Image (cartoon, rainbow, N blue to C red; front, top):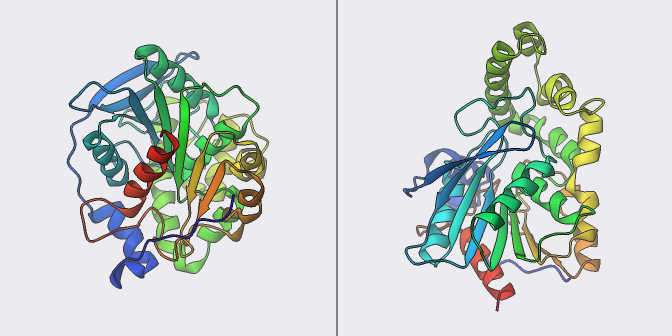
Length: 320
């Protein structure tokens, strides 16, 4: 599928990668009622879904997955959910394991390729209500997770009709190296401190599996993935985890119409995260690369962001 020419043209201020990224993550405010549902998983753990419902009975539901150390309460999730609810959709915002404000029950938590959890949530939603259409929207790590799910060797439920992914690190190792650059020092440190805090809580609950000293010794995201992510989820090491879970290798097999929006000035993404060649041969993969937008930015001079409006436009066209 030819590369899509983007129409996103922000004001001068939001052409700056750092401004758009920080504003979207920490300054933007969105108000939206949510109803929490706890879903018990097959391995004895749980996931929380934060639901938002259309005023009128809906036949369509949007399933959203957040990014690294995010949650269904983040502004980019709430903004998207609000826009879809106002347009007659129900929205299920999935909190990955341990991300809903309460530590999950098992030593394992979440990672960028844990598609088994996503599969269970899809099955739960389809059993809960007879939606005619289930559509996906994933952000960053959540986008990688959803792309991997769509491209794996599985029978995707016929109700899954379209997908939109935003600011996705399709090449996990490449994106890690990008985050290690000096211009991304603040972001890398912020992720590191949040993950360390998460792991300190986990070490208290599972002292035989993880020690406070091990957590304190981590000085990078690579250290975290070597110490915990790989060990807790049965990978040999961090590189094995990155290699097996990067969605780049699964894109060519995606059969559901999928739009990937990765800004060219996204400092979190490596060159491999712009899969031009794959988009050229897979008729179901649409690639849009705006010049601006930063990481999950895409701010406009109005309530909703460009990617929120673009998601509705793309998905609506697929459902016509």
